[in-house]
Image 1 (tube, helix red, strand yellow):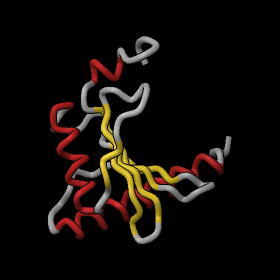
Image 2 (image 1 turned 30 degrees about the vertical axis):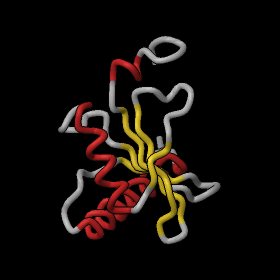
Image 3 (image 1 turned 90 degrees about the vertical axis):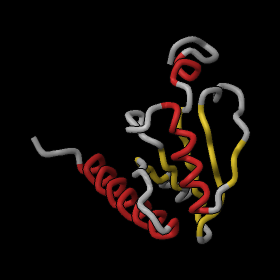
Length: 118
């Protein structure tokens, strides 16, 4: 059976976006930043970088990794809204494109947030 073309194309796009964004931000920062997982919203072109769940630094360092990315891309901290306790979000425009950096900073709070375990 042939692979699903749409799934294959989306996976290739996400890999390419991750490669470009990880290199771009590291170059702007002047040092290698912890690589993020990236997605792109097809309808808006918004880019979202996710600090990996298995971040080598662990939950306690996710905020530091996200802040380093925010600093390199000149993004602004977004206050946590309802249902977002235990996470951090930064957002802003990079060369006219909306970019968001997001990560779970407290796994216990996030997993047991409003509405029970996620």
